[in-house]
View 1: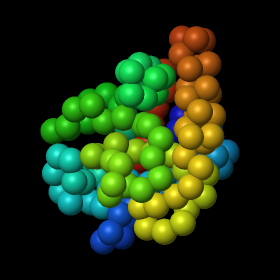
View 2 (view 1 turned 90 degrees about the horizontal axis):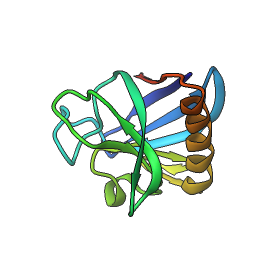
View 3 (view 1 turned 120 degrees about the vertical axis):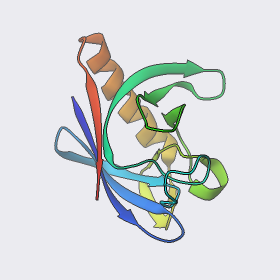
Length: 131
């Protein structure tokens, strides 16, 4: 299974179109590109494997593996990148500005459901990030 983030970079944040197996799913928001600095930058473009993860805060969510120079990069709900993200990625149903969106939870839940179904079929789930 493949998930694609097609990024557009701005000084204040990063907006992306989100695709699942070639089909448009929604959008994503991230922090701006600041040379992969921890807690203030989005991660580098590339291909990452997604894994299932559970925490008390986010419940079932997704973890990007092998992010160079970074750890615990997650896909989780958020509507404002600068206020709610520290390098993670948040799916949003609608973009409302740079690094901002609305209705993150419904799209997040849909993406998690698709990924967890793939995990149940013993499929690898790859996230490709490019501009």
